[in-house]
Amino acid sequence: MFKWMTRRLPPPGAVFRWSCLPQPERLLELAESAASSPANAAELCDEFSAIITSIWINDVNKRTARGRLPLTLSAIVDALPRGIEKVRCLDLGASDGVSTHDLVCLLREQLRVPVSACAVDLHTRLIRHDGRWLREYRTSDGSPVLLRVGPIGLRLGRTLSFPPAELCRTLYLQWRRLRAGLRPAQVIPLIHPLAAGDPDITVREADALQHCPRFAGAFEVVRISNLLNLSYFSRSEIEQIVGHAVTYLAESGLLVLSKNQPNGGATAERGSVWRRTGAGLRRVCDFNGGFELRDWLRQFEAGETAARAAA
Image 1 (cartoon, rainbow, N blue to C red):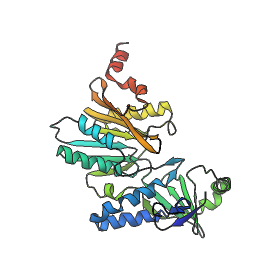
Image 2 (tube, rainbow, N blue to C red):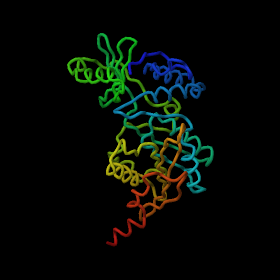
Image 3 (cartoon, rainbow, N blue to C red):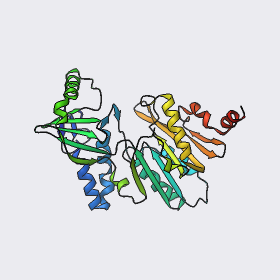
Image 4 (cartoon, rainbow, N blue to C red):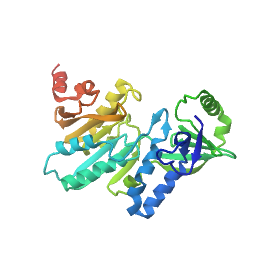
């Protein structure tokens, strides 16, 4: 659908909210406002996350919000040993990082120990490319996200259900000469001000499918929430990501997998927690029925690992 580009996010309940799309530049304004006045960062939080949620990249929606993973957070706190001296967390598929910030704040409050985190996501910024009469927003790897011509916007990062809009999207993406002539003009952050402003949270733009050697054995908690979906990855790719995550765990570290699944008009948060032992993973608990793909991951559990070694 064609969208009317607005400077701010339309308020909830606005009659024509569905036809409007906030300008990505608003993210930069919010980030700068939060940096200049940290006391106002929390007030800007929901608007920033709502704008991020409106963004689609390669048919994937960057859905995010504060307080979206309460059961996952509670399971992590319950599974960490009392008396632990510090907690280093890795959040794979962190989106805008606001859920990473939720995790760090809760662990600080509950455990009273130093807590740090690394938030990893494939897309942490947009780059605006300008032409004489249009603007195109792309990720750092060149994936198209949004086209703006005057006040009219067209999503490029998803297949559109409205045939005329989808035709325009397809034709524009095939117009290579025009697109090649666009020039980078502005970098727009996709990392939430609360996460960006926390000195104990670092952000890394990376692909979870690629192994990072420097992460090996470095974390007491590795969380992967709302990333391991069959609409994003094949089974072998999911197993590859989990295999990498296991190597990132320190001894006795926790691997936490969860997903928000549709449940009527709301979502149900389901997940599982494993602990790394010398022989592999040992499942600690499931919550709300457990992570939907947990049976695929038995190959990483201690008993299965030992059985394969004996064979």
